[in-house]
Image (cartoon, rainbow, N blue to C red; front, side, top):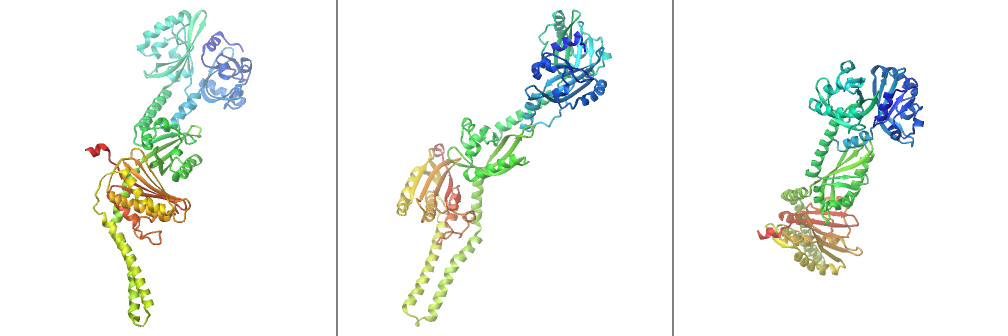
Length: 614
């Protein structure tokens, strides 16, 4: 089929790949130079090949032929499909097909546009920040307009009618710029066009530019224009391929607005936030999370979130991320502990969500952390005060703990009274010994209760922690050494002064060390470590051992009066310790694993040098 010089000139000037297809056979009869690198085939292979062999998604050659009557009727048709490149890769493209009556036979002009960016980058960003609604795959057809050396419209396709609202009859012979370009740009257009008609040259020729255009009703809209020059009978004509990019502009604007909103929330919001890759490595973390964990932004960027997760919560964290990957769960919430750079523990309410690409495949995790350390500490203090006010439970325990030995004494004395003078002196001594033992039991309970009220009025004052801990170690060192127990101690930099009652604090630590010593009986290489470190606005003192440890059900009963795991314990030691710490504005938390050991963490308020000075 012979193609006119007008079309060949048009093809050569187009910056995007353009194919000329024979409507009846569906075979490519001509292509411009841009199609060769764009589609990856040499011209000898493209020409003569069925268009359905190059583009998957068009159906069979028979389907192509059946679509021609419809295309002939509506003149323009746009569709999206994949180009099967010579190297086997698939390139997402948009085909804008235009039916042209070209004597002696008609032609189909196929403009091929690479939509990789639209399909991947833009839509991936939309999904990543959850800002935009899912857009349709629809794309406007290209308006093809030709103007002669006078600026008059000589060619106007169906898509131009749709985009601008004018029919070809209305536009034929009219100066294009007076109807389609804003009045403020008329003078500039004439100046540029007058230069163009002299040599067919111009800054916009062979390029894709963005320009404001005007519809029939006066509405202005953004248009993307590809301009080319053709020489007909020695006169330069201009051909423009025009696409309404209103939707694209709106989408990009909405995307930019959404990204700005996300940036504001990420950088200035109250929650610690991090974007993780699918291995759990931190891609980016905000300042709140850095402050929460004590790591600088450069340090945290090379870490995995699991590196900071408390060992006791590690399994739950791994399970949560696996659940998001394997199940259709939008997000998961849980309470998690994280270790700070200084070794402290931060309690958080965590929310994990999974960000997927347009293809549905996972791309990133989003982690959001709310610091609840102080909240839990205050709740612990409130719970302690409440439990101490529940004296009914305490009196019930007292009736049981004192009532049993009283009854035993009463029964012993009644037996002695009934058999007095009839039993030998040895038996009398045995019965009296039993009674004295029960009295000693009552005496022990009363002494413990005395300790409970001993520090009812606390003398809270600044306590220098380094000498305090040093003196305490010296106090318990001898007893520990006699039992073969190694004492370890460490006071972190920055630990200086706390607000506490030194007598009450010493009593608490004595109770914790005594508990550790009891749990180490019969253990190999026994040790007790006493450490102090900064923890937010407080100082955390930890007493840890490698003793027998406790089961979870035993840990739940630790702070209930008269509940004990020791044969001769009263079950009041930790209750009294918690009360004392609550009075100092502090708290206590116990971690333990059966057969591995126990760690008791107490937190008391610290005081700065500035506050002491004031």
